[in-house]
Length: 126
Picture 1 (cartoon, helix red, strand yellow):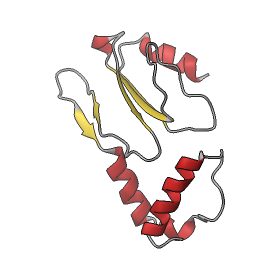
Picture 2 (cartoon, rainbow, N blue to C red):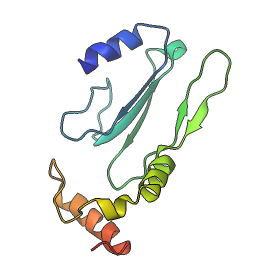
Picture 3 (cartoon, rainbow, N blue to C red):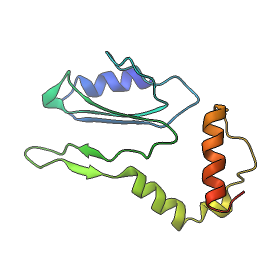
Picture 4 (cartoon, rainbow, N blue to C red):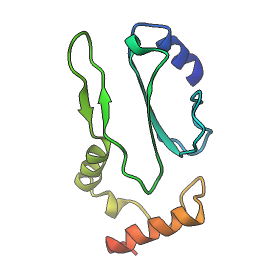
């Protein structure tokens, strides 16, 4: 279903901004991308196809700020998803709402769990 939606947008004059933060399923395919990353953001400008900009990252990396194309001659706008997520997390007091004793699903690697443990200890949550 997601692939068919992607194909529809890519066949149109619309820009595509695809944010893949899901770990439970295989990531959406990207041609000629030999590296692995758990998370990615793909930006495809209608005027630049088949070229696209890929922003790969993993759990221990901040989410990269991306350039979002707008309509016509309007300049791209920077979207800092990490800053937004941090602000929402802090404003919503999610550090008090989330049970960090439960293991995440799907399971993480030992290295990822070590990084999470380090982050929680630094924030006094463990």
